[in-house]
Image 1 (tube, rainbow, N blue to C red):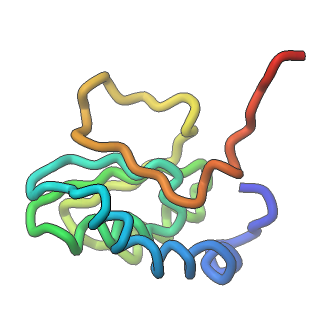
Image 2: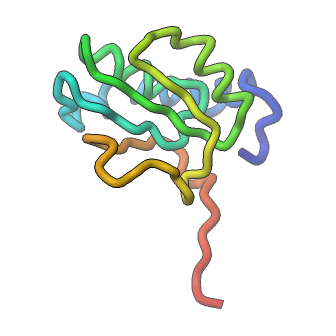
Length: 117
């Protein structure tokens, strides 16, 4: 993620918004108990934490291109229902139907868009 040298810098700018909005987004999405959720662009795990706190048996997989952010998410969320991987939002390696829901928050501005030349 361009512009963020470390997880602390990311949290100061983006993570604080994710923590404020995460619970509302999860409530709005209506995640049901037991669902498997993909958190694309998980950053340091703020939305994943909100997803986990909404249910006792929901599972979340977070993916982010920054290995530093993924490591931070793993350190922060030591919950057996959570798994974090380094990966690209435009090239996810999960089979179709692997998740009940896919969520993302505050990450689209980091995805390169390619339009007609």
